Image 1 (cartoon, rainbow, N blue to C red):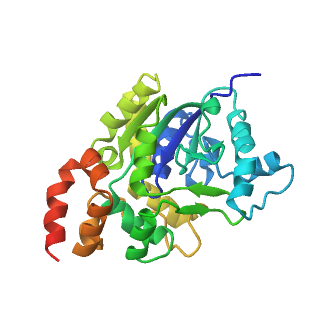
Image 2 (tube, rainbow, N blue to C red):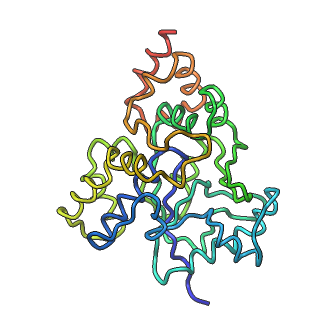
Image 3 (cartoon, rainbow, N blue to C red):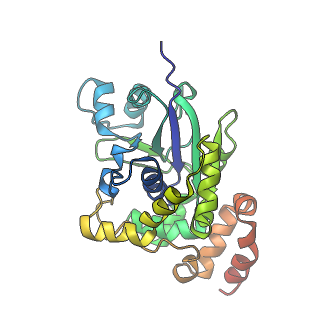
Length: 288
């Protein structure tokens, strides 16, 4: 049997910059003028919720009605995704690298590595609320629920769990070759951050090509694409997928009580990955 360790997972909690990263990498790696728009990113990469792969794995149109049905078909669907290209390739996921029953959601036998994108939970919360069409307090509740699951209308699921558990699972998974980048660092110093990422991928950075890719995939450029073309990945009920795209928007969106709640729920992971936010968010929370 051929080696199927071909997937480089592009992993993140929802609303942490996964679409932006996929678009940026597409513009860097694909020939000039051939990079897809936001609605055709599957020309460059794919996702582990692709209906066609689940249909093939099930041997019929897949319409799962339970977690068990999804788990039964997912391993074969992921193997088909791994084998869909001859070499290593990127696959988007929001699942955690954990076992659910006897099923490993991110199987080592198809995994070559992972790029994990993390965004601070204070900015994730309002963006996640808009994404799932709920209020902020409910969004924070979902981010703090170990059973949180999202999925398609046909029952292909994303097993998210808690935000902090998601981060920890990906950043500490034993034996997993990975590169962790922060959304905020990609905003603040995109060239340096992507150059480091390319080195992880064993690709020599081409600075002119990288500069063009960064310019083509700025938040403003992606937002204009959505306004002009729409976006197939935008959830029903959501007015737009690309809304603010900046770091620190939480100051405008969250109340002191909500900031305090996020701090309390995710204290240890915030301290590890965002120590620079501890003092400001503590002062903000006290203002209430």
